[in-house]
Image 1 (cartoon, helix red, strand yellow):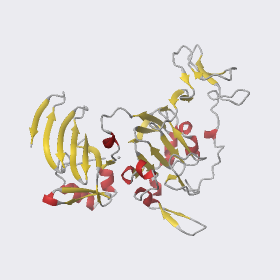
Image 2: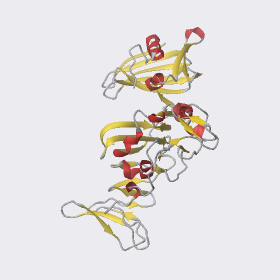
Image 3: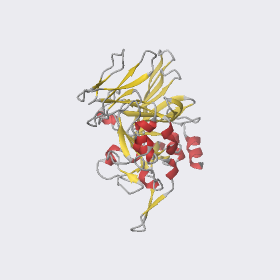
Image 4: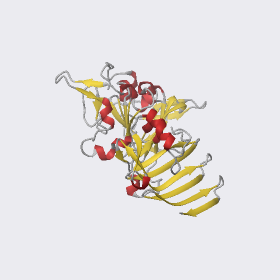
Length: 364
């Protein structure tokens, strides 16, 4: 905390100013079986034909009440509501709790696990992102009104890890039907493990060795996993994820909505205040007294985002120096200020009012 206070005290560069107030994503004790109620078919919504194939059609009666109708056509590939034009190709989408949701794709998916996520699979403790097993599953784009049905295997084994793909945003609510507090609002790439395991260890009975779970956030993963989820994209959850299974979920595809180049889109993004509080983000002075931003002790390249006096901000850094755009927005979402830097040197400053009118344009 002293380091965070010191950092804020000397911070007066670019859009990150002195009044900064900022708020890149297994449980061994579980004896729950796979036949947990969450794993069972939902009555009147998921039915099977005589050949065991899921083949339910959800319709509405005259009073608007939902009813599941079993089709005798085992080749049926579509789902629709009565008096609705919605038709779903089962190869690309599915129906969960009456909601049409898309199947996971490489560009839009989230991975949920009943264990912590790591680059190795350890019995009772860790799963590997994107390797589906009895405690984990993918979730595709859509609105899920009950988490227990969105990722039932993870919930049944206690929910402890999420991996969010690049181009995907995950919003988790504390209550069903997309209501309650927002427990998580995270864009990928991100790997998130349950905060209750911070500072804890796993123990191997065979080798009598132990693993510090905190090292998962900072070590280099094996192979391509380190490219998919670099250390700057890993963190602990804000609250106990075991309680998140009672809520609801929204998975949003963001791929294609950005105008960034491929190189820019691959840059990590980190939450500034969170990383400061975890003592992973710090500053030092470089040549010509330029401020060098360090992440885990190394000059940081990527984006830093957060809020300043209630306004959204985002800045780009290269080798620890402000480089590229540093942006700040009005509370109505309109861009307020953009500073452009070249390796720590300010190049230009442009400002707008709340209606989008340019109020100044300065070249330095």
